[in-house]
Amino acid sequence: MKPTMNRCQENQTTITEFILLGFGTFPQLQILLFLLFLVICIVTLAGNILIIALVVADQHLHTPMYFFLGSLSCLETCYSLTILPRMLASLLTGDRTISVSGCLTQLYFFGSLAAAECSLLSVMSYDRYLAICKPLHYASLMNSRFCIKLVVGSWIGGFICMAICISMTSRITFCGPNEIDHFFCDLSPVIKLSCSDTHTVEVTAFINSSIFTLPPFLLILASYVCIISTILRISSTTGRKKVFSTCSSHLIVVTIFYGTLVIVYLVSGSDILRHLNKVFSVFYGVLTPLVNPLIYSLRNKEVKEAFRKAVCRFFSFPRIQIF
Image: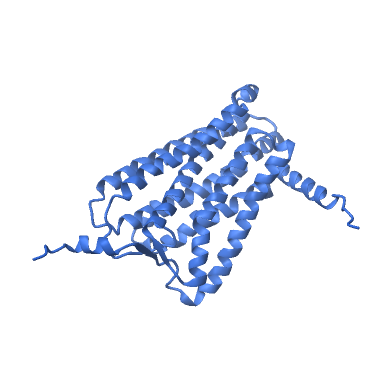
């Protein structure tokens, strides 16, 4: 007589994929949502790639501030490619299934890039602190080698941090149901589908997320306290506005990023906002990469000037006649 397999073991052998419910509760809006997110995807990629191209091509933008901006745009491009293509395919075809390995892969890149963005935003605030509060030492402190180390450290730190969580998550068992009430694979809804003990994974994820959100946020907060204190000591109103304009775009991006982050992972845990989690996640995962290049391009005179020169060079490029 064969030994009876428990429910967890039976289901574990059959579950090879998850179902991302996404926006399946609104079937009549699938085409409209597809077109909306397609436009968002195109604008996001075009805006961020344009900023990267301008930073690389224009000599006037070869400064630490714009090097970090180009790095942020590169990160946002990868960030969008992690979420949007899979969501667009789901809305167009109606196929909402994703393999377990594919789900963990998406979760890994999403979490890694989010952690890297937290670090990079704090690096950008530190750069503005040195430029405004330590202008005489700025060139020697924020040299090209140090800038590269800060950016590479932000990326590597984020990917190493998430590798630990994914390594532990891949070892837990999933007994069903296999439906994820989200439009992408996020850690919390994935862990909820497990039938094994997830306490260690949850504690590790909490520690890692705390390390990559709280210290960077405190660094950003401390930097802007010093920046605002320095600005208030400037006697000229015009001078205060000019100095503050150099960091206002970054401050807006930080507010949007951390604001939506708090709503999605802290506030939305309440009973009142739990059902709006997907809506807030759209702001955090989809709209934030969209507004970043718009904020920097619309509020930054040097970026607009670089874009104007690039357009002028493009249209004045001599045409080659073909005989």
